Length: 88
Image (cartoon, rainbow, N blue to C red):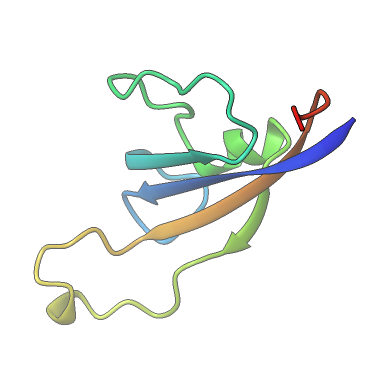
């Protein structure tokens, strides 16, 4: 069995892991099924951590004037998943 990386970006309502997810993106190096874009995978960043996701990056100090209304509270998570043998 080989391990492949999955990456999860969660944009939260504030720069705290226990605030609500407002947007998300998922990238699967394991080639598994993608979650439905209509359903957020977790309610908060803490829920993602409880499900085995490892936090890689959290937002630094946020200047609201510099964000121009963009999503500013981005958290990046990863996990490694086991995949079967890859075809040669």
